Length: 215
Ligand SMILES: NC(=O)c1ccc[n+]([C@@H]2O[C@H](COP(=O)([O-])OP(=O)(O)OC[C@H]3O[C@@H](n4cnc5c(N)ncnc54)[C@H](OP(=O)(O)O)[C@@H]3O)[C@@H](O)[C@H]2O)c1
Image 1 (cartoon, rainbow, N blue to C red):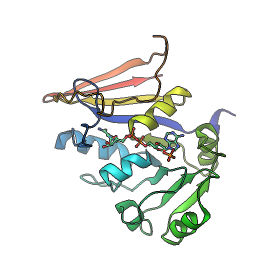
Image 2 (image 1 turned 180 degrees about the horizontal axis):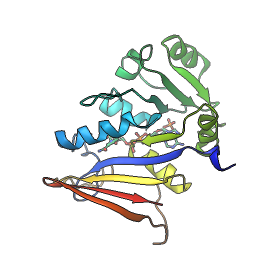
Image 3 (image 1 turned 135 degrees about the horizontal axis):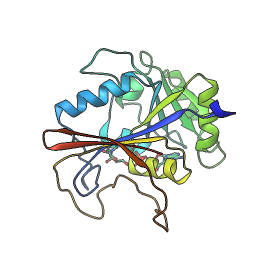
Image 4 (image 1 turned 120 degrees about the horizontal axis):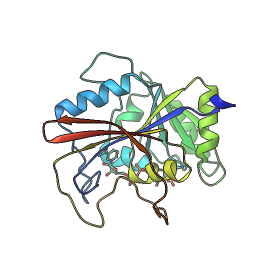
C-alpha cells in the first residue's frame, strides 16, 4: 500500500565541511533565525526521531520552542534501552509523548523501568531495529510525517535503506574538521555516486544557506 510508510524529512545543520558536531560533541551550529525555522518545521510534523547517541551527547528536549505549535511525538532509536533516566527526554516523558524503539535484545528490567517513567517502549527487530518495519508500525499509528534529526549514524541507516523523501540542511559558516567529528552521514557510505536528490529550494539567512532536496 502506498501509505504504509510515513513521509520522512531528514533535517540537520552542518558546518561548511559537512560535520554535524565537533569531536567533543558540540553541535549548536544554527543561528536563532534558523532554529526558529527548524521549530516551525517541527510543529508541522507528527514525530521527531533521533538516535540514542544524540540523546546522550546533546540531552535535547525535542519539543517546539520559539514558535507556537504542538509538540510532535518524540521517537528515540535505542535497541538496548540504554537511555539515561536523567535525560530531559525521560524526565519529560509524562507530559510529552515519547516512544523508545528497542530490539528484542533490550533487557526486560530496563524496558519496565523506562515504561514506568512514561515512555512507550516498542520492540521492533531481533538484534537491531528494523527501520522499514518500524515505519510501517508508525504509519498504522497515524504518524504520517517524520522529522529525522540525526545523528550521523541514524541518517546513514535511513539513507542506506532509501527511506528518505526529503533532506533539509542548513550550511552554517563554521569549519570543524577532524576524523572523529560526526559527519552528516556516517556508516560505510555508498560505493558509487548514483543516489541523488533534486534541489527544490535554496534560501539564504545571513551567513547560512538552507537547502531543500527531495528524492
Ligand atoms: N547538527 C545537527 O543538526 C545534529 C543533529 C543531531 C545530532 N547531532 C550530533 O550527532 C552526534 C550523535 O550522532 P551519532 O552518529 O553518534 O549517533 P546517533 O545517530 O544519534 O545514534 C546512533 C545510535 O542509535 C541507535 N540505533 C538503533 N537502531 C538504529 C537504526 N536502525 N539506525 C540508526 N541508529 C540506530 C544505535 O545504538 P544501538 O545500536 O545501541 O541501538 C546507534 O549507535 C552528537 O554529537 C550530536 O550532537 C547533530
